[in-house]
Image (tube, rainbow, N blue to C red; front, side):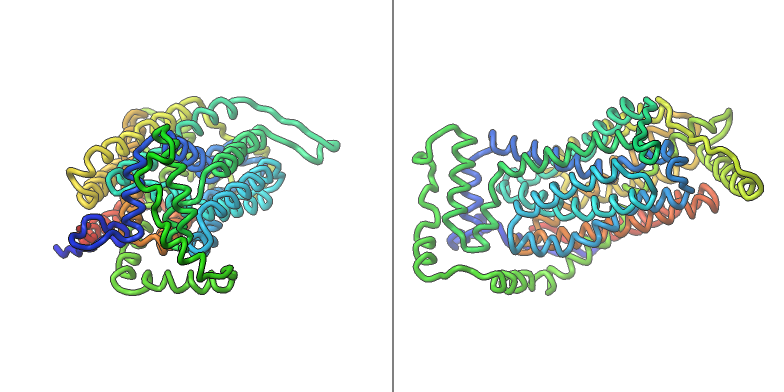
Length: 520
């Protein structure tokens, strides 16, 4: 087994006989600030932002069964609608990551979540498949613009002593958002509202109201982040030392309730601030971009380029596994509800459903039949809530074990669990077996994604951190896009094909994890 050792470029406090770097001083100041009200406010904003992102991608699976007839969708079109937000994410995440490192985290958080709110409203007012798919593309585009700075901002308000735990706790927000989404979906989609305007030309169905109601999360995220400061580590990379010090003082006062005079680092960077104010002029947009390109060059050189390619490969298949199974669960659960019979396993039910679709398509060429949507029943929503709750457990467990077992070992363990449960899904017969296996796969894959993101934040310097996250997430979202389009195609070939394919790919990526860089 080959292991690579790296030294975190931001953490200098453990290096003997050398004065702390600027980032090391920020970490010492953050340690002095402690963990308090500010970090709770930061994590709450992150929770609302994560939930807005979950809504951008995960509301679609819940409306697929009920909007099937309104939007005249077949199985492949459902797969494309599931995948289209990720195409938008791919289009923006790398550029947004670079611009975030150059111009700051907060600007792109506000732009991303504000734009997400606007296009969420557009999705809710959609009357055609084309309008909905276009709106969902831009929802993904804008959420990706805010996701990298969201992760970076939370990470950069933490010191090395609490960063791992805080970031793993933050990763649980996705599972918590899924629980909230399932409960509210159950409460809203169980109704059958329809409102028509302009003599029936414009119709709002229950799924339209559903999307409109959920759009408010993006609005709340925009408001919450508007009241948070910019990252002090970003200010340091831009040599804006006075602003970095002011932010640290704000965090200290809010966390401790003490006056600024009692802050040990109240005079942090004062000499540097004085020198810069005497010798610097207003920085132009061109010079900022030039400095930004210069600061990201190390990302494309050894050893960071190797780490980037390594994590991109892992995230491609991990996010593919997680999102394909997560996004298709409401549709698969609805099929199981309506096609369950004694002695039938999951593949028997799915093969029967795809056979019925082929028969319906053949008959439709001969006669015009009324489309009757297959609505999700109570069981689907209950199962989704159960899966979301169980998905919280790995985040709690990994938060506890990460310091004792290590991220690499946890990643390998979760990968092996995913492989076994994905294969076993094919023979699931009862509701209990289906939900248990599904929850285990989804939660373990979610833990793998969280561990990967945490390692990326550690291994890349502040000046290239958002760009690295952007590349990693672009890779994962590409995997999600490919997986969601291929899943219904493979499913039409036979139920075992998609499940065994996912398991085989995950075996490969778990094996690759043996070569993960070792944190020194």
